[in-house]
Image (cartoon, rainbow, N blue to C red):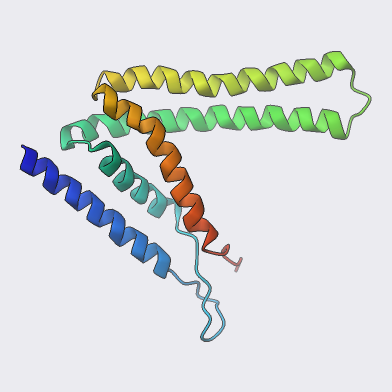
Length: 169
């Protein structure tokens, strides 16, 4: 069983390395001769990279991965919805502060409370899903999710900083 886990982890890490190399080699069609413009990786490429990264970081067995990914994707979708509501609340607060200076303190307080409540929902989601993860993977692997998300986010930001934005066609 340990040999199978080693092989599985090796395949995931190899896939991650190959994806990283392929993403760095992407070129835009409209680049100047001799100076092609690199592209950002597609959403699908980022998702594949994330799957490989998380599987390696968490050292998921095939059985754990089978249970983990549907639950993690559910969390990701829920967090996306919550984040959208949080950003909408922040936008409303910003508009009230900048373009509607006549808004009273009570209205600004209300908009601030809405933003903070939405922001809190994101943390509650993580806490709720952490408990769900504990039902399918060991506590140390569940705890690694928290660190792996930040580590992947930083890696992706670094990768994207080295690639200028795609030019619109």
